[in-house]
Length: 426
Ligand code: HAM
Image (cartoon, rainbow, N blue to C red; front, side, top):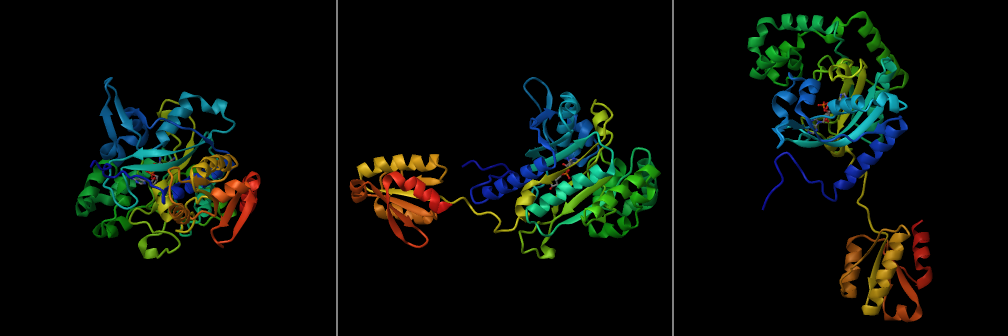
């Protein structure tokens, strides 16, 4: 027996309906806000992520599925969608062809992480990106898409955290202050943080090791080092969120794990076990439902024009986990055709196809079975109606329609039965 790879999973009936629901809601929402779908390859040149996601990130450093293909090229299974979306935007000059450079994508991503609840090696994202707009109102709009998504999915525990990490002018000032504040305390931090202190000190804010917390709590806050333009921008984002009644709070720790962020960063956190959260399933330690931010230098860094960008990605596994339990039921057939005898079976198969072509979800045991076995099966799949054809019905040109909930049976003319079922269902 060959099992699925560690960190990958099959999405089976029973769960897949929840995925389809999330996908439907997400798609409808994106389209309402003016985003159009783009589908990029899941495999790209390794260089795209080294330059885009950033060589100093954990993703590029430790988690990429990269290999040399048979042609000798270094390729990578995408760990995130943003660099691919930027590449597609630049490669196809989408700013000239699209009415607005607002795009979204859905699909699998790959990161070689230690699997746990809500964290997998193959996972899926809904990715939303906007290019070419600087106004803080667009930051707020992107956050609104994220917030509304969570609301429309019925996920009741959602905590929106925002921050600003400054621009290429003011961030170095903050970084200098951070390194100074760390000073000799670096040696008191965990070994991961000691490594981060040399490669990417910002990552220290992500540390969850209890002993490190008092030191991290004393570190400087990015928003205290913003230049005038970044401060005004961040105030504009907050004002617009307030105007739309979207509740937010600032998290000084929200510096995000990717190199490209400038100015606004945000995350929406779901319920952890300690929050109770009986509305839906709780998430474990991996409680970020989605995250994103502005990346004003990335398009240019990847060889495109100097255009700002902002977006977010939601982890679809986490959305599915956090969805209330009763939100989607499996699709149940509207009709099951039960046929007794060879002649009835031939007519049953005809009726089955007529029902399906009329838009009904219809089943029939294709292999000959006893009446009892067929009725039992109709019960198990929770059909609304069974349409019974036996010798008597054939002779009279009728079908017996049984309402499975009430047990009521009606004889309906064979010719009228499809219309009858449709009417009953409506
Ligand atoms: P990210 O924070 O790395 O950002 O990932 C976004 C979301 O993807 C996370 O909040 C989480 O829900 C989900 N996620 C990440 N890794 C895993 C995993 N191993 N298993 C399950 N879910 C996971 C980005 O990817 C950026 N590209 C977001 C962005 C778009 N920024 C601007 N535009």
